[in-house]
Length: 153
Ligand SMILES: [Zn+2]
Image (cartoon, rainbow, N blue to C red; front, side):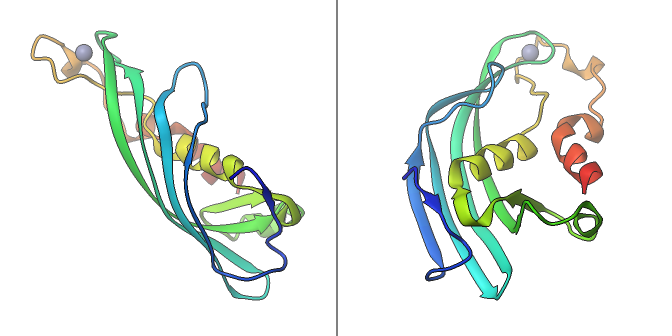
């Protein structure tokens, strides 16, 4: 399904149960498909939520020894969707909000953002010879993009 949804009208909930073939960056190589099971709900006028799961696997490098790793990920998402026209001052009041044009909502953009924000940028292998204890596993480093979203709101 690669259609633009109009979230300002129509029937809710909108159930999306699809496999998406999309890539993010050269560093994050997604294997096969992203299994998307999401329900877009509109509990009252002007409020839209997306809830559900994203399941996929991706290849990353061990941050210590550079070995290729396969990571299986299940992202539980529960995010409010607001129109891109919402002013910056109002955005500060909200947590976990995805901004997009509600008249032309593109589910792939939503999926991309959720994956970016929810996967770690450092991964480690489980090889006993790999010396990854030396690397500082600060919580700050594991989801850097999540932090960026916190800052821009
Ligand atoms: Zn390693």
